[in-house]
Image (tube, rainbow, N blue to C red; front, side, top):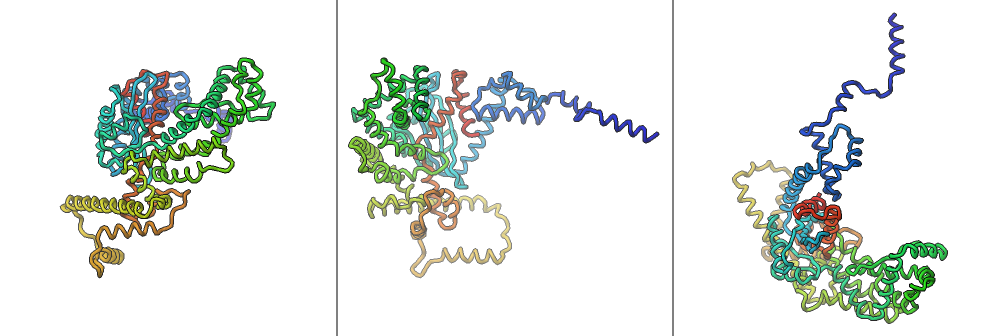
Length: 559
């Protein structure tokens, strides 16, 4: 009897639906998460993070597709409306990220900054302010402090007030700001002068001005570039010509590339336009020559010769702006070495160069060199660039040797003076710490063999020599001399990782390196910030309030 009931139970189990849920599981799955529950809050916070980080419109949470996606992942979660994200979760996230950023920047002593102006789709003017610093782990850090709405006239005084307010809002001391990197706008230059802040002109902007000026000064270049723009325009406004271009490319065995339009504020786009026209010249001739209305803009052999001269002059420079526009590695120390490479290599005249190519190269190097050596340039800025190159273990004095012994000694003395200043600051901090903690000092630990020898070595270093006590300047000078005597770092290596590994060898000099190497060679950080702002203030939400713009840009850059 028992065996028969067992067989019946087994047969029922064999025909039972695989993976069938219990009644309890079904009831639990049908119940929605409570809004006060931990799981609901985690999912809501994750959506808030996604909206802020990826610059998504807040009303995406009310879309049918988004709701179906969330329901597929977890049917028990009910997505709140956009007002909940706009008024509660995103402001809460902004508060927490603001507190985290404030806590992080309290640990830094020196920092640099980049700033620029931008107008949204609704023609609302904003000013960005981003700080850059090297943290205690020797990592290059960037923090967007604000995207400030600035409806007042953009005079030097108003910009100066806005920048000063930005630092005050985050309790940052302007005296600890090593340098401000900007473009060459007269108002931003004036504001830095009003505040008496050290300002570095953006290398990328200077290179753009030098190249465009060198080309504009030649009428042959202006004509050839004008023909290029007409060619690009004729294809961009006709799908039939685009179709015929593709057919011509296939028949000629040319790569099926589209033509490129140039942007007046990006010299690199001009170089790409010229290069693409030269690549596609045969296909362009076939298409434009077959149409009477466009046959007049077929490039002549003279135009092609000029375009080849331009291409040969500027194509070696195509990667320079990108290389010096990084935000996660040291760039300022490479400015002077880059000028040296431009003059001695990239823009050096070749035997195969045409006279036009030689003229363009000469005008570029003459103009950009003047922007860093002209008498009008602040001597402190030149000195800062020299010190930064000196403190980069990849360069040291390699690209400063042309200065002569006198000026090289001046750079070295500047580094020594900075080290002495650091010693003084550290001494004051130690005294303050000791006086504050004297009352709560812990009981002395029991000494062992290791601490005995460590204390002995410390006393030996502090004892005077036969010729008298070692001064701070002597200690610092020895440290700098040892640094210069060491082998230079390979150019492919990271100077910050090198400095991180040298706290015992260069305890004072490392602090000075941390100060100078945090400066950015370009103001690209601000331009990237405005790309983010453009994603926030899109055509679908061009009427966002300025405080919302500031909040969303801040979150996207700092999350």
